[in-house]
Image: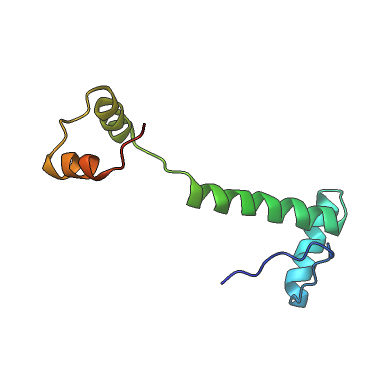
Length: 92
């Protein structure tokens, strides 16, 4: 289970293999930035990608058309839906 973020501390400490650090340092030098900026930019880009993957539903053209058709011409309510609607409290 993910932990709640700690708002008082903006530091992140990492343990990393020397070979991985060397690669990151090379990328930092090539991109002419500092390590903190490089790591934060890269991590944020990946984090945004992961969030989008889990929070957005991507439909094919066919599926999009099925949704639009169902919205424009909804099916008639079946017995279960009518029963559920009758069970709702009356708004007055």
